[in-house]
Structure formats: C-alpha cells, structure tokens
Amino acid sequence: MSLNRRTFIKNTSLLLGYSLLPYPNLYASTSQKQLGVCLVGLGYYSTDLLAPALQLTKHCRLTGIVTGSPHKIPKWQKRYGIPDKNVYNYQNMGRIADNPDIDVIYIVLPTGLHAKYAIKAAHTGKHVWCEKPMARTATECQAIIDACTKNNVKLSIGYRMQHEPNTQQIIKWADTKPYGKIKNIIAEAGYYDSRSDHWKQNKALGGGAMYDMGVYPLNATRYVTGEEPIAVLKANHTTKRPKIYTEVDETTHFTLEFPSGAIANCKTSFGLGMNDLRVDCEKGSYSLSPFQAYGGIRGKASDGTLLNQRIPNQQAQQMDNDALAIMNDTPVMVPGEEGMKDIRIVEAIYKAARTGKKVMLQ
Image 1: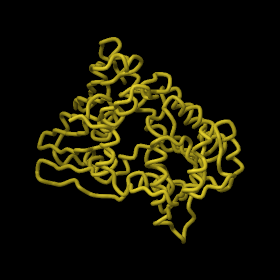
Image 2: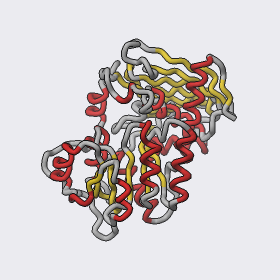
Image 3: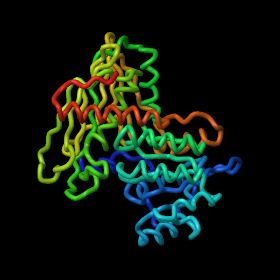
C-alpha cells in the first residue's frame, strides 16, 4: 500500500497534538540543569516533531533557533518564548559561541548542507547533534568528526531508532543469537512522495531515496547482525516518474553480504510505501513492522515472543539520551563514526548501481 508521508506520520506518531498556544515543558526536571538546544533549520522535522518533542524532554529544552526565513521567527518566538538574543541566521550563527543559553546546536537541514553547518556549529564550542544521513560523502563525515574533535565537543547523529526499545532488543539479539545464526535479512523503508519540486529531488542538496530513507534499512542490517558488510553484491535504481526524478533515485534495491555469511536484501523508495524488517535465522525468525515509523514500532518472533514496548516520544527519548551523555561526559549512543560507516556504504551502493558490478567494502 502506498502511503503519503504526512498521512503515514499522522497514523504512527505518539503525543504529537499541536496547539497555537505556547507549550508547557511537561516533564521538566527541577533538580537537574537542562541543556539549551538551538535548532538550525525550521522545516517540517523541526516544526512538527523536534520542537514539540523538546517540550517533553527531561534533560534539554528549546532555547534558540537559526533560520533563513525571517517570517517564521514571530510564530516561533510566540509559541516557545524564544528571546530576540537567541534568534540567529546562517550568516551570524557563529555568535552562538557567546550565548550561555545554548549548549547544543542541532543541524536539521538538507543533507547536502550538513557538513557546512555542523562544522560551523562545532567551531562555536557547542555540542553538535546532526540529523541523519550524516552527510553526502564519507569525506564530509570525517570533516565533521574532525571539527568536533578539534573543538572538544560531542557529536551525535540523529538515528532515533537506536534509542527505541524494540530496536534495542533486536540489537541485543545480534550478540546473544537466541534463534541461531542469522541467515537472511529483508529490510524495506519507503513512502509515496507526491511532491515534484523538493530538495529531496535535488542531487546537490543530498536528495534521493537511498540517502533519505535508504539509511534506515542499511543501518538496520548493521545493527541486526552486529557486523559490517564486506560487499555490495548488487544494486539498481528504478523510477516510475522519470520527469520528476531526473537527478536522484526514486527507488533503490541493494543486496549486502556480511562476514558471517548473512545476506541482506533491501529496498527503499519515494514511490512505494513499505516499512518492514525481517530476520531469518537457523532456529527461527523475528520481525518488526513498522520498524522505523515515528511511533507504534512492534514485532514478534517465531516462538511467540512479542516486541511491543512503548515510549511516549522517540525524538524526546533520543534527545534526552544525547543530553545525558553530555551532562555525564559519557559516550553518545550514535557517534559520528556510526553515521560515517553508513555513508561509506551508501557511496558503494551508488557505485554498484552505476557499474552493475559487485563492490567490495573490506
């Protein structure tokens, strides 16, 4: 069934009721300092998901914004009580370095702009959160990591699924293997995007199904196996709307091989609705469906074990976990190196599709 992205999100989100009135911070901690978060880019994900989620977090709160759209500022200030001194544009965001209200800069821009502004954020001395996919190339990913290391700030990539409890159970099974050796994986993520003029159809901005949705099945194959793939066995791109998808892929199929012998068959698309993860093992199987929605993640194993733990809000859980890592000076759950590993494989998938040949990764 093809799903419109906004309908899909509406049907699977939790606690995302909106109001024109300012949000109360329902779960604010009074005994522990909250980190101030500045959102860079006020598009859909910031507006409809991250900003509301920051009203549910215990360890961080929304204190600043960076935008190139002045007309958006009054609404954000009214809704979230953001003072003038915490509002920036892309030219002056370097001044955040002198703002004690802001501890974290969260990059929520088109993929092609992640490296430029994540590096700029690192140079302010503030901690950096960057949405997935991390960047367009592994070289850009390394540049972000280097900038954060140089400025002694933490870097976390927004893979919210790794913070989700049912996914975490599957990650544990990669080590314990309760159903025996993993043999085959099927991972598919996509939605029907009806837009014909959007940055996700622009190559320079990091568009394409493989970058936007493809990192979900790709990352899933890695955390399901606990291994790094040794080869892209094959890959191909298809499109049903060639007049719209002139620069980037609308649908991509790819197959990965892992050191243990496990084979992963994956698909991602802007033209088809799909959201499934299945793992077949020697002594059984398990699955999540949906496996990367904004809520309602659920699944089961062949022996009847259910995977149906619930959390109120995935984005709030992710940001609280990342905030605690900063406050306690502990490793973040999804560091820049994790994001770079995926992008290295994405580049290999594009090469395999372009050449029609197997691409070795190790």
